[in-house]
Length: 358
Image (cartoon, rainbow, N blue to C red; front, side):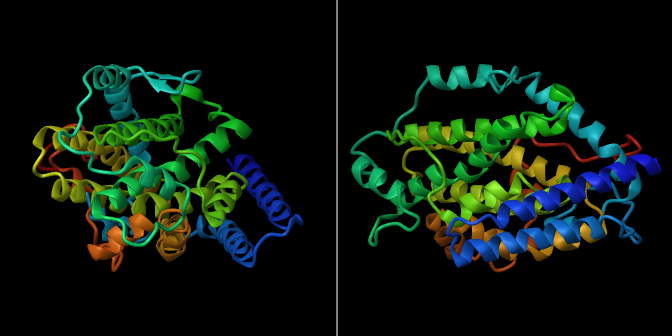
C-alpha cells in the first residue's frame, strides 16, 4: 500500500512538473491565458495536499443530497460502494462501450431511431440559418438577436469545450488502461454522444452545423492544460465544470419549453434529447463527488467562479440565459437530482443496506 501511494505521489509530481513546463513555454500567450494556467497549476499542487484531509463528520445517510450537500464528503462506506453501484447502472443503461467507434451498445438503437424519424418545426424557420452560422464563430453574439437564435447558439456551443477536451485527451493518451471496465471510459463516450444529441436538437429547428473547436482562447488553453494535470487535480476541476454544465443544460431545456410551447411534437423531441444529457451529467456529478474527500471538495467549491469564467469565455449566450434566470447567483443551492426526478433513466440513489426505508 505504501509503495503504491509513493508511486501515485511520484506520478502526480511528474504530471505537475510537465504541466508547469507546458504552461511556461514561450509563444506569446496573453496575460489572461497566463493567469488562467497559473491558477490551474495551483489547483494541481493544492489538490495533492487536499487529498490527505480527513472526511470527519461526513453524514452516513445514503439518501440523494442536494448540491449544497455535494460539497460535503460522502462517508467512507458510500465512497467505497459508489463505483460498483455506478458501473452496474452504466452497464444496464448503456451496454458495452466500443472504443473504436466510441459508441455504447444500448444507446445506438435510440440514435438510429431518432435519425430514422426526424421531427421538424412547422411553419416559417424559427432561426435564420445565415445569422446562426455567422454568430457560431463568435464568442459573443451580434447585438439584437432574438431569443430563439440566442438559444440555438447556446445549444450549438453547449458541449464543444467538453468535446474538445475529450478528443484532445483521447488523441494524446487514449482511453483509460482498463478500457471498457473503467467508468471514465463510459463518461468520455457519453460526452461524445452529447455532441450528437445537441446536433439532433438543432435539426428539429432545421439547422445544421459543424460544432468545431471552442472559439474562446481561454477555453482552448484551459482544456489543453487540463490534459497535463494529475487525476486528483482534474477531478476537482471536472466537478466544478460538471455542476455548471448541469445548470446550463437545465436552463436550455426550460427555455425550450417556453419558446416552443406552441409546437408540442418538436418540443417533446427536444425535451427527450435534453433528458439524455442531463441524466448523464447528474451521474457525472455524483461520480466525481465520490472520488473527492473533504479537502478537494472544498477546493472544487472554490474554483466554481473560475470555471464559470472559463466556460462563458466561449459561450456568452448561455451566460446570458443563466443570468436571466438567476441561476448563477448561488450554484450551491441547486438540487441536481430534482432536475431529473421525472426522467426514468436517472441514476438511482445509493442504498447501502438494500432496504427502501434504510
